[in-house]
Image (cartoon, rainbow, N blue to C red; front, side, top):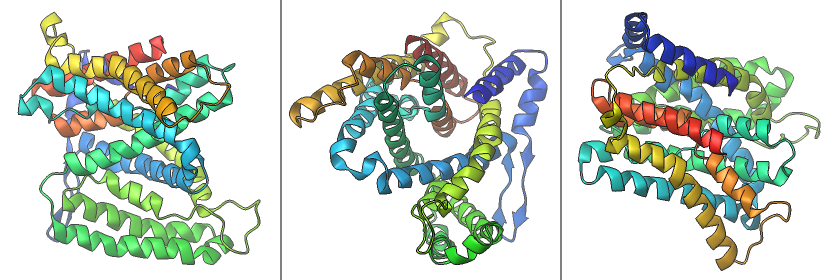
Length: 373
């Protein structure tokens, strides 16, 4: 969370300083390579969103699978409240955004921007301010954020997919299947030599990512599916003290994701220029829809969903959690940074006013959500 803040602040300062030309030139510099008929030439900012964030989403896939196999999402009775909360926290912000943008198809394309919760920021804020809060509340926020990530992944895959190439998509299934088989049935090899996993699985993962990119589906979805393909439980013959392959990968990839990939994405995505922005711009439908969706929509959607679920299903919250705790956590869930910025990149291309306005709204709303929470 701290690294994200530093990267975002540096980007904003550069974008509003005499070095703005250098910053924008670096972000928009094209880099890549040609492989036969396949072209992978993108801007540096695009590489950060499609390439570096694939590592972040790979970890999200590992976390989601772990929750479904061994965590709170394994038991429906424990999972139903945070799942309902996550759904409410997606639906209400989207409705608020659509209310402000009306029937304008260009503006309404950003309806999913205020639906995302940044798990890194949210948990970091809760850790700073909530050291004396019950552990069950942190578990609730973690589960809510994980389900929120899953919903965001599905939205990106369905609503923000460009022209779909079925040939590349079906071709991606072959190395993905090979990755799954190797991860599950090559574990004896990996147990003897953990380094072998890198030499065998990493090339397959890169091929899956490349084919997803060429298929038109956002390449970060490849990271999620690769994460789902890694076994969570230790293999037969392994003791309980040994880490599973999922735990090994999570242990090794998290520093890369949290320390390099996500901060670099924030650096290239959060550089909003405030030059020329006035009160009219900051009260535009896009800004109001995103800001109120995150600051107001998230708390209303999450709290209302929890209230209805506990009343209709007669499921009780953990006794240590008070209703004021739920309201506070729902406000913290309004911090929509990493995934919201990604969706704004997909919804509004560089060059139109909404590109900068949507990012400004995300930064402003996330700041206030953290303060209010």
